[in-house]
Image (tube, rainbow, N blue to C red; front, side):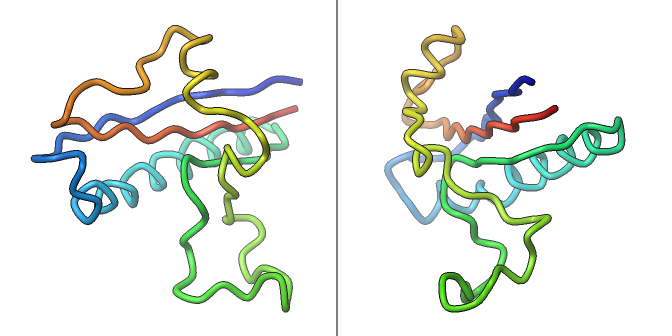
Length: 111
């Protein structure tokens, strides 16, 4: 029926430092999980996509075996053919702010 597209903003010393930038991902995923939880509590069915590949497990079982946590897993937005930069622009959102800011995006489809 619809989709909720949002971002979280994180201060970093240098957004080109991948180690530092990826350390902010956990906080974003926690926020995304809370948003999805509230949507589900409100009676909505959800399908969650995130700005990067799922990283719940240290070692993924897929495709050899089914996902261990199908209710928590979250594929990448762009892995579904959605270009995040274009979607952000069409929603009037920033995709890049500056070298001291890391943005993460999530997209939750609901019905």
